[in-house]
Image 1 (cartoon, helix red, strand yellow):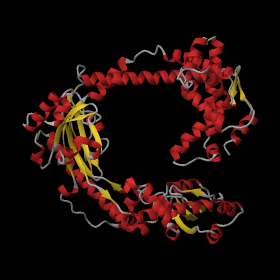
Image 2: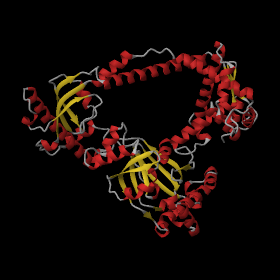
Image 3: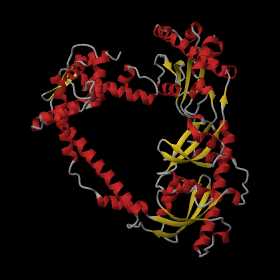
Image 4: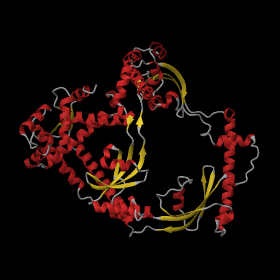
Length: 600
């Protein structure tokens, strides 16, 4: 409730303007303008965080965010209406508890203050009645939600079945076979061989979709060398960041505290005689090294223990010394040398940073003029002539990722823009700008064989080499099936994997390797292709899951709990959808547009 109130304060203080109280009705309940505004604002913020930049409202609108926000707000209000229809509500006591527990309503003495309560609500544009009604409806809605989620049976059988499946193990022997292990002499390919290979593999010799385009762009890197630098500002920046450039010698330490001096002294003596070690002492106390991590410290910060700690090499232990928690032993993890970077040494970095910031501000100042040029129908050539932007052209395909195509924003625009679309000014993640015009889109097409003859020859050779490797692997497979038990006897360098589960990993094997192994019977031998090479594998044993194993029990419970949560969520979504379908909803488009106006 406290978080809700903070949200309401932010809403009342900073965003929405106007006197429209509602954007529609859901059943008998009004859908407040405030609820829709906050939901829309939240979704835009989430998407902006994902994009790494602030999303404009037109962009959010194009992504359907307002529709999703309205659906979410309507869904919540439909549950409020359903609770009212069912006669569910909570008493004044519940509402009172929530109000009294909200920190924002407390006075100077830390207890609830009615005048503070009224003023806080008034400043957010809320009345006491409206606020307490929202609390009461929220509590009633929680009752509905709790009733839906309660009573879902624990799918223990499902958890046990899945755990048995995932905990099964396979023991098998396998060996790779590569072209280097096989004597292969390929003949010169005939024209017929090449044509057959070319015809059988059209995807290999088909070009990607190509977009011929023209673009203009400007980044801070392009102009920052020409930016004037203020030496006074550089020295001020250096002083502001002095802790970054001037640092005393430090140590990374660990600290283990004891209950009394005698215990700490006995511990250090045991370490010095080799009876134990610092990590063993930590473990004996039921702690981890993370629990005793003391971070990086200076000698002055460590007081009386400082000189002894700073006299140690990495791994050394000293103590006991008195700490704020009691007598303690200290171990040094690393020695961090002092840093004393003078202004003259830091100046190049500071100049670069300042120039980059000035370049970004200069680019920001050009946004409106460039936007106006494009809106007025200026060609990209005209934009380049009248601004600092640089003109370029390219034939872009999805595998080009250098130059301006190194920017994800550029690739996204190019991939989705059509020839008829007008160029729009777009932002780059380093503060740069660009606009692009698609001139032509060339569909993927089969490249004539004469234009890729060298590639076709190389492809045929790779195909024939892989076939020779597979043939040799199948010959060795036949030997193993005849009763040869030792892989080494037939010239294979084998590896045995013991009790590997389906979640295991075999380095150097194809992604479907374990799937194939778990499909085999004991004694089976298979040959699997592996990117031009081959793998020979024999299944030696099958081990079932152990129901008595603690790991099995833990995994079974986790799977069952996850399944129960998924079932409950599905039931809840179906219920809320059903409630929405049978609840009459009326939306005021003018009020919705008034809310949207606050985002523009």
